[in-house]
Image (tube, rainbow, N blue to C red; front, top):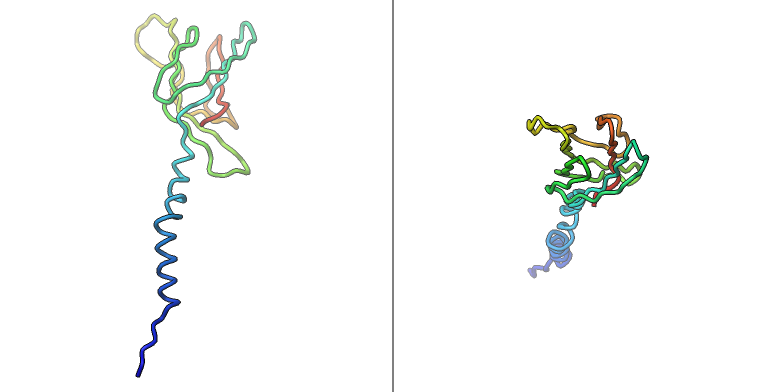
Length: 132
């Protein structure tokens, strides 16, 4: 009795190995691409009515007039049909002489609905624009 070699099973195993080693890592890394290294915000000066775009590198603080703004983390949504951008932002008011290092704003901002966690300041207004 002669044994026949099952070549279709061998092809299936090799195709599975190719998928696991070459194609599957792209699916795993797609989750990491949702997080960005830079956060774009807009600052409105309520007194002069001027908008200023500010690019923040995550983890670094940037001074803008009387504010010290720091973006800790930003993330894009997984869904393309309803994009949502979220960022964790800390804002300190430099005119505060108490030296308590208390933040004027410390929390998550959402691009689609900035009123969920509003930034409340008498002179400036901040909203999230993009994450990349």
